[in-house]
Length: 252
Image 1 (cartoon, rainbow, N blue to C red):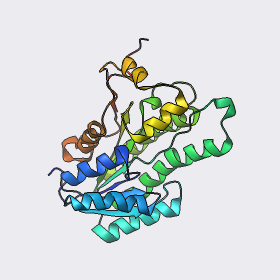
Image 2: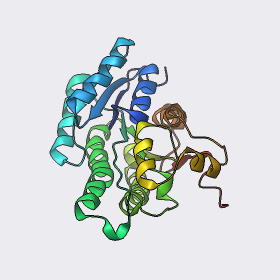
Image 3: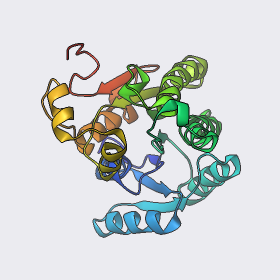
Image 4: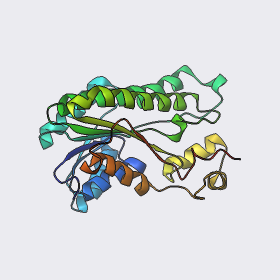
């Protein structure tokens, strides 16, 4: 029970990696806020977790909207009495030729991935600064290496890594730890959409990954759990790759 009675928010947790993190936290005794832009989707995921006996609460919020983020934090503290852990997992992608990328798509990705992460960190820190806390930003290997047609996405992920380090050193005196987790290719429903837009398939990912397979949502969640728990009490400002060797490998 590494997170017993800790209050945790996991943004974008109605599916995929976020849902796996929310469940992993709940398994370790946390009080977990499940979040989505859609209250219906958040409620659906929360219902499944509650039926397993976990202490969860669903709150809809659009992380790109400052007031929505403020409300998310307020409702969390009103429900559970505080805030110990924030996982900034909410994110979107737009894959396509950079010369054709629309202003709307560019702003959508920037506003959700980068600005939303900053808003989340900023508002969470206001509640954590008295007692300390842990913030984990879900970035990507594409915040360290690049492929074509991800101009907006990679821009946000590189920036999120920088933001993570700035906040880590700035808030260390408040005992707020800030770290990042950078997955490579994890098998989720969103991966199917990305494959169609990006023109690649399972075989391409497996061939390029030294561990010769996709990662799982649980494997990401386990690393996030470590960073949320006291086991990582001397870790801040770090980016942990969960990538099967993707970044380390420089071959064909």
